[in-house]
Image (cartoon, rainbow over all chains, first blue to last red; front, top):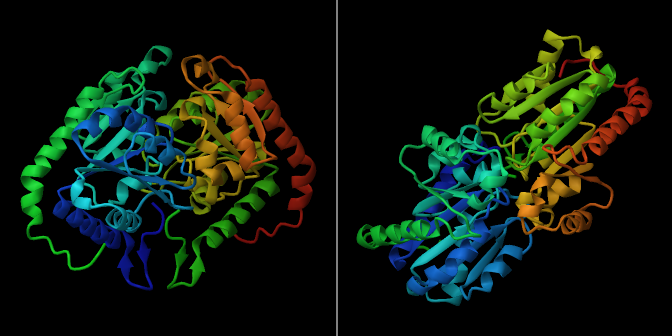
Length: 241
Length: 241
């Protein structure tokens, strides 16, 4: 976190961001969309996970991706090969997506597609284990990834991300034999920060744990279909996001 | 980067940070200290590199560490086992060290030791591939680490860090056989961003490349001993940092 209070305007930037996130979420709710926000360090395997999951999940869900990167459309181009709409947002010097940027993505979804035709919007955030956790974008749940190569101590050292996560994927499980790392120790450290998150060790390479991750995604959309739609009946959507 | 302009005060926070960094550097210069700022994603191996290097480097240099972490002294405690002073700075919710925090570390160095007795101050920044690159802390050179597990595309996707680096260490070389990664491709991508940085592939585990890294550290302190001391003769040090 850098400066979050603009003294001239007398406003807290995190509060402004939260209002935008709530507005984005009201749109998703009205359209029956479940939005998941994927966050991690650079190179923890967010894009690789989506590449592994899209062939299965797109058989069941109509999916759009909002892909955040400081520069380039490298990740967006990888995901476009899976025949899903990918809206690329370049954040420039910003180290995280915020709700205003994602609102821009929602506008493009409205302009180029019919949003009610979608079930899932998967947001891939900028690779950063700190700041994205503080800027909600309108998601219904937060998914944090931690690769086994990053070390056992990361949940203790970067607490906010692990406190905020609804689902924690421990990625690159296939590399465990080559590392001095204990997955049970990672899980114990996550639990020190967060008693409620679903924790799923996975390998996008071998497929281990991927079905459990898909089940979690399914559970999120089911829960949403029951509660989210009814919640959204009264949502005020007077203005565009 | 988040908000960097405080409209009420009419000041650019990056500019204020830079003034603090210049002040810190003037202190280091006056004491004959070379300061290196180590930056990378979480888990790229900054602490492991220092653990590997300290037994050799502390034979040649009097070293102090400034250790930045959001919370905990886990890394600081690892490095304290190498009989060097380690000043731990917990940044709280901040995703990077800034020059004011490091000035606090310098104060502690002055209070508890005699700064002129040191040759090297090694700053280990918070794990983040974005924000630390924009906040100078008073270093004479920036060292960026990128582990081979993070993927070949990171220099293109996180340009500021790679543009700013004076030395780029490609870490965890021992894991290459187990990954779909081409170190030459990483190097080519770094070169697209930065024509001048020294690039050294290393493994803290096997020791590969570590002597080349030590040579680079030696070259920085030698260059500093020739030019830095004379530059610092005119440095104004009226106030403490």
